[in-house]
Length: 378
Ligand SMILES: C[S@@+](CC[C@H](N)C(=O)[O-])C[C@H]1O[C@@H](n2cnc3c(N)ncnc32)[C@H](O)[C@@H]1O
Ligand SMILES: [Zn+2]
Image 1: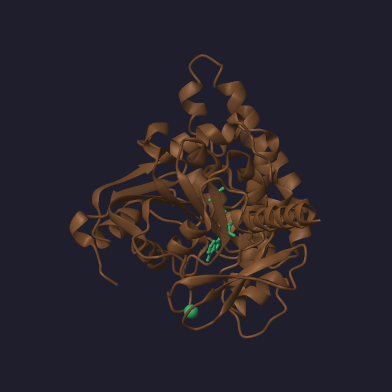
Image 2: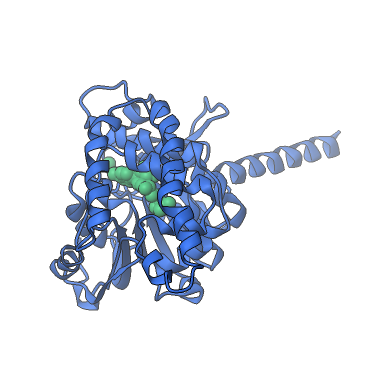
């Protein structure tokens, strides 16, 4: 009888332990409960968060994080801490029904959520893109670094940063986080968090490297969002951003963009499903006018240089669906800003970064290092 009771208690203990570790493990190999709580902060008052296991937990909301100062509660749904403040959180989770929120921000989150849910694919070509955007940093750079992916979308770049040995914290505002979690789960050391770039829910100076690819130009005040990110970079840490370019001295690209800009005045207000349907013929047109002619002409002796001037030639090295994805992005994103090289360089200078660089990668990749002397005791 006593033996039975002991073994019963043991089984219960093991079960409880398994339950706890399952609930607080978040499916990632490195994010222990401690690491999570050491890194995260309340997006409102920047105080530490505590874990609370929900006694009425059901399948999707397993537990929550609670601010130790303002007592705001943040649910963890499907292993993703949702560190948005209400009413923005309700607006995004309930697909835009709450009041008193920035509608454009909600539309941005939902528009990209729609996009990445339709285009979750992890093409092998993303590896090449990752290396291009991260240059001059190669795979070795990532080993052992604590990295923030600010605006991770479907998680395609967080996947490679983690694969090369980084501990990656990937944030996104909208439902894209669910796609990112699924895509990065196989690689392990990625913690996906639903959060707003304007209020990153992290301890200051947490990261060795921050990158934000194709995100800032979709925000209402991109430079201030960029400056804000620097507070989360360790002194001596590096930041790398990718932004759309404003073509200079390229008349065909300028006309095309002017046309797209006019069309966007209408399309960004249309239902996402409608723009999704339009993205296919738009991609076929892009292939018909530019991608196929580029492929043919670059093989014709003497015409290679001329072919290299073609707009949209970059799609020649990707599957057709990538072009469809980009047309959806182009026509549905509520905000789209474009920059000259000088404007991005000026951002980096105004931010007081060292070793700055702005280089063309079908847009501008700007990078710099936070001076060691720039440590701020906040
Ligand atoms: C064009 S996608 C780029 C995604 C990813 N970086 C990539 O290159 O694949 C822009 C992403 O930024 C996210 N985003 C927009 N505003 C944001 C904000 N305020 N905070 C966090 N993420 C935001 C969108 O939800 C979207 O997934
Ligand atoms: Zn708080």
